[in-house]
Image (cartoon, rainbow, N blue to C red; front, top):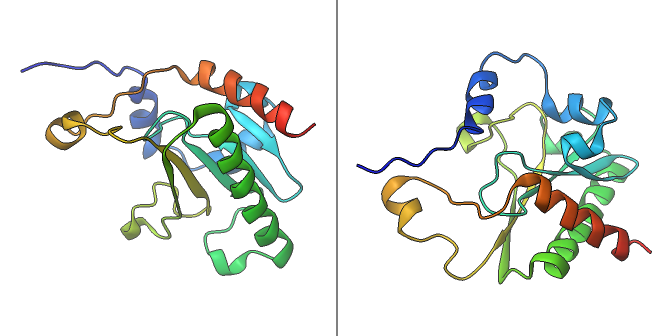
Length: 163
């Protein structure tokens, strides 16, 4: 049996059940955008790089307000949420050149939400052949770039897009 080491997962495992706080509330409040991988702040929502991504460049768009139901978004929050989804797709298209995207929300724990009390939408870039036998056979994802490098690339591209 071969072992693939992913030591960065321990932080997620150790904090998953113990934390009573919400990372989607805590991270923007810390005002440490680079350290927390916050790429963009809107008035009602923000774009953050997923710290435990499915693929390289996996982003999330979340409202600042702690709500667990999509129907609780105000019209302004919902409109900006969609605008930031568009910006995220454009950003990843410009910088990462994926062949497609998965966009989606998991509403409720039974639907797969790891954070089920604070809604957020995933933007997952996809490339032809990005999931090979490792995902199917070993339930392992391979990421070819560190989060800090991905953040720097996306932040630089985003700055250019917003000019």
